Length: 82
Length: 404
Image 1 (cartoon, rainbow over the protein chains, first blue to last red):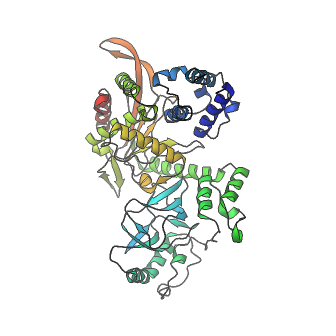
Image 2: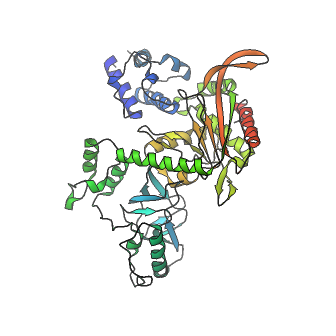
């Protein structure tokens, strides 16, 4: 999966949880949770969404690596077959 | 003969608008089955039956706004014949008219003197109508449901379906054209305001706070979740709810209702979980039987409750059952909350944001995850001493998370 395609998928998952946001308007390099209101249940659903759509297992101990949208896309790239 | 009435849906939600029936005459219903969808100022609600029976007649029509307690449908009990329902209708037609008149605003539509409406075929529809007879909007059931979800007023739409019926496409088109549900937000703000004003007026609150160390709970939960699939992970919010529920079992005077001048303890622990809605506003439906459910089951129930609250598909029992409210400000939240009790409950428990803070253990200052728990409770029922014992119990329970 190409980076752009991966980014679109992450945006779609995010939008399914927070329908009011426009993911393309977010600063991809800045901390995600400082830009949109995601509580712990929303965040868990976001992780579950990535697990279900991309079949990627994200252990809880990796949450700290997933700060910005860029971090998330890079993390997923590393987990997915090239 | 069973009168299926619009149940109470919590403080200051005193009326509802029927969106659609989920049953038709002749259908069998059981306890807990969804009978109708009713829209209130806060949410669309799936109204459940508390009885077992067979639907005989649907009294309320879609789009009608009716007060709580209104007979919406007649159900036959096992073995009853239709004659029982007809007799009931004859017997109740006149008094019911009078009752509804005194309760609703000037009921211009119902002016016949008592007794005059006792005819072979009493118009049961007229007596539950609000002030003016409602104009029935033609719409498909799917369109009605969608309109409730999207907060679109059907009366404002022109239908493009057969005979001018409103279709699901008409509703969605309108929703896209006017996305701002201003009316709903205004109504919800008013509803919350009315309940909170009543609380502040009537309930003599007292407030307590306690800092609770969560190092053990955090570590235990991390190792618990490390062995699990992402879809089976448990959030701290669920663990906190479980601890609250067990502590309430030990302190039953904080769990129940103040009604008719005295406290009625609740037999079960159904915390109302405060859930903020993305478009603004707040709802606190019951998570049933928190004390007796296992942690995994509780977590699944919590996830399901949050999802349905945001999709506006909560059940009537979830609105009427909460025995206490629990509000959790979450990760990014403020340090603590001074809660306002939701009447007729007698307490509200709040958790602030969980953060690393300095805490002294065995004479040594250590950084560890902490939460400030606050309790606002009703002085008509308990004193601060009871509240303090409860908070101490809660803190103690959270130090042995493996037992929760």
